[in-house]
Image 1 (cartoon, protein in one colour):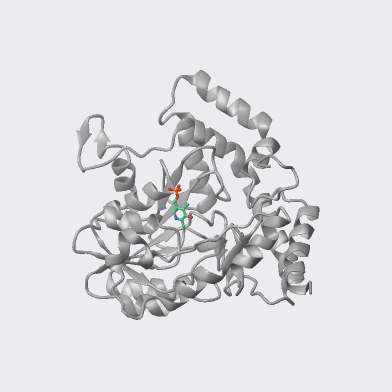
Image 2 (image 1 turned 30 degrees about the vertical axis):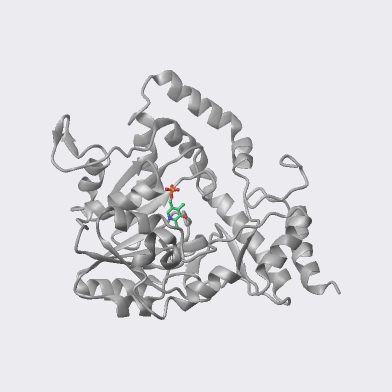
Amino acid sequence: MENDPDIIPVSDPRAQYLELKGEIDMAVAEVLDSGRYILGRAVGRFEEEIRTYLSMEAVFGCASGTDALILAMLACGIGPGDEVLLPAFTFVAPLEAVVLCGATPRFVDVDPYTFTIDPNGVEEAMTPRTKAVIAVHLFGQCAVMEPILDAARDNGVVVIEDAAQSFGASRHGRYAGAIGDVGCFSFYPTKNLGCMGDGGMVVTSDERIGPRLRALGNHGEVEKYRHEMVGMNSRLDEIQAAILLAKLPLIGKWNTRRAEIAEIYDGALGDVDLEVPVVAKGNSHIYHQYTIQVERRDALMSHLGRLKISTAVHYPRPLHLQPAYKRYAHRCVGFPVSEVLSEKVLSLPIFPHMDDGQVNRVIEGVRSFFLSP
Ligand SMILES: *Cc1c(COP(=O)(O)O)cnc(C)c1O
């Protein structure tokens, strides 16, 4: 059953490997042969490529997207007594980063159409203790950044972007992760730019933050065995960097194919009883996920499962209702949009190597749920 070729997965990182097998095998072999497995040539070259791609001053490869967020918080000096605003509807990692740094998370509800943090909510939630906002560019499109940047600037608040799901997405021509003060990325295998293990990256053009990021991820070292700050061990490893270097040239093509599939879905699912994803004005969406909203979500999910079409729920429980974090759910009214979304969202298969036949099967599968007697 697992290997049934008829099953359409939600994503297919192996297909990217097969497209690039020659290059990747050779790149990995080169690293193995070099004898330098940590902070060697591949990491340096990858960081340089990203610096050019994103036009950022400082790029630091680290061990995961979660670490990227932790390093961003530490580099900005955020800790106990500080409040950090973040969306209630997202993956748990940014929340972990806030709490592990000793700061206090403050949830903000999200926009019901784009799923990204509600800028009005950000302004309302700011207090004199607010030190940072984490804007998550969820599912492949940027949060509506301008009002957040304005409110942050007026209040001396740092804007951290979680671009883990949005490599290559842009807003008004600026890349996700290169809009605020610090950008965080993940190269987890199923992200739209993924390696073949764990990996992440932090970027900034702020000259106070850049050098701190690099040192913090390497034991707080500024020179060999001189530790100027309490750091950690979080480095991108050479093998993963070599794989990312092989994949980077194809990210534009892959993101374009994702958007093409999304356009086909949009056109074919507009007349059935579900809501297709909405793109905020000014955004170029790369569709890390194609997430619909539908009332009978679980029934549709089972229906598609019977047709061998995999789907996923991102995310079934908002952060303020997660057992480990309930004490931060400070509002008695809750976060109603996040709560409703967690019951209605369903992500359909979308990945660059999905062929038109698979796309049509998904469309027919969804339509048959609504149209069959
Ligand atoms: C995947 C993800 C992360 C964490 O990345 P890891 O590399 O898995 O640690 C952070 N934020 C968001 C929004 C993510 O989707």
